[in-house]
Length: 76
Image (tube, rainbow, N blue to C red; front, side, top):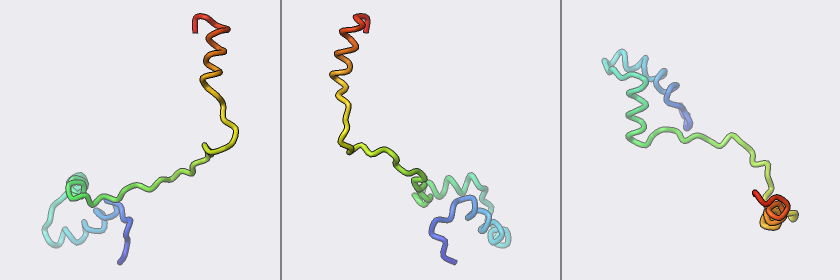
């Protein structure tokens, strides 16, 4: 059974049946703490797509814009 990205809750569910027969008592939170202490938790994947292209040719000059706003509005 090869499940490389099996989460802790699913792992707890699969192990709870075997652990009952062997007399091992560990709760879900205890399993989370143990896996965290051993650096065995699954790292989350990035579920988003980067939509902004920062390397485009059109770039706004922010210093020019700030200077223009400060001249028009002295309280800025």
